[in-house]
Image (cartoon, rainbow, N blue to C red; front, side, top):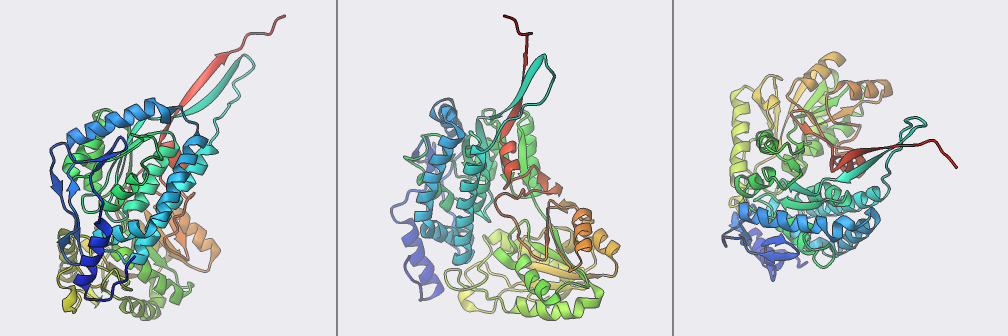
Length: 503
């Protein structure tokens, strides 16, 4: 990749030219990159400069129909006849090519999402890790043989659904592709994937790199808008399983659309995640981790640790270390060494800024940030400062609703019971951080906090093999571990009557 050292705009104009040269960002259907059926396009923006990156095929219902047909043909043909080991070998061959194109994919993701280049690279690498994990895990899957007595033999098969649909978010495009498409393909299904309209480029390119490796029609990508291509995927009667990551309101729409055909869904939705610091914790480590937990990826993560619940006895010490960590984070060009780039798109920045103003109106105190960076070079992009509130009542809207931006708040508690009550007093239950040196308290809190992932003395602990998903309105189903393979298969019980042996 070419080095960049001029102005921010010049850097990004050069990077856009480099990343898009010779690439057609169309729909990927039946092993070919094609225009949309009606020929229409749209252009996602580079949020660092507010300029379009490339024209992308604007898929709609007809394009999803074509993708489903291609996926059905592949499932009924070569792909459906392969063993898990054979499918895994092809997926691993594909991931080798993806790793060869790691810099290209990371650059595309930085340009369309706005995340720092080092973070985009880590996202792509981890997404590839998940593809490889599922390929290996599926090859090791075994059926079961329950004991049903001497006069019968029973066994349980697990069978793929067939054509499945994956609707991806914009915050981690290739990573979530690995989570969802990786599990679907490894389990023997075919895929119709709809990337987010804000970030379709890296996903399209990753699918193009599977051409001549995966059989035609196994992996299809239909870019477009949620109310067009996304709605067509979630409501298509030829798609037997749907997986969606995004907001609760859109997740509810996906679930309603899938209900017409009783299509099973996996939903990974929002979070308002507690980060609990008990008085015996390593406070400095907890404070430094808290800044990363809430501000990594600009807070645009469903698992961001945004609710910092700190015991009153260590609040002052915690704030000293934590605010230093927040203020040391750099905001700037994601192609350079900044910790934080722009938010993904203009309307999202407006939403985040509305929440910041709401926090002020509700009576919270701004401890850091609260506005846009004072740097003229950043004015064209969708930048906001890392923002921290104090004096927050747990009933305030900023303490209850997902902001999905670089906004955290600090509140205190005095007893274990109060900490757990505050942690659980939201409609979400995705992740939680617990900081303590007391093993009994750590295990007790892990049991008492209502969330799908509990990370003790660390944050962001999801790795291949550990299931990820939420309680309450944070979603349905699990991804990332072997449970994801179960999400993409159906069990079938087979019983055979056994006659008495005779000669």
